[in-house]
Image (cartoon, rainbow, N blue to C red; front, side, top):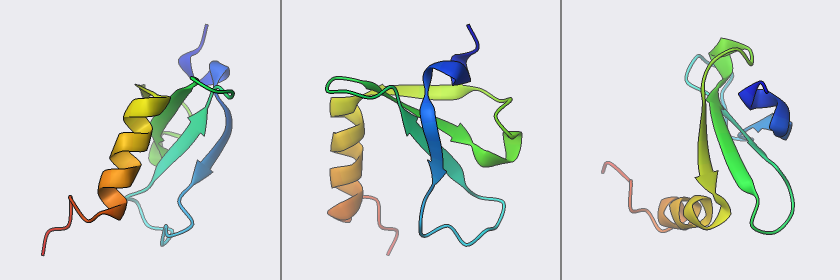
Length: 71
């Protein structure tokens, strides 16, 4: 099975500026689903990183808390 085919509703961040540094995110749906992340420049043909929903939530929460801010 194509790794991309198990994910639905690929989307880019609403904060994407339309440049070349974008990723797309999708999920397999449902509680406990898997979250996929891919490079938008690959037009769906590149590799997909997979995270459990709890791993993805921890990452998103860390971003919101500023843990990855460079300043």
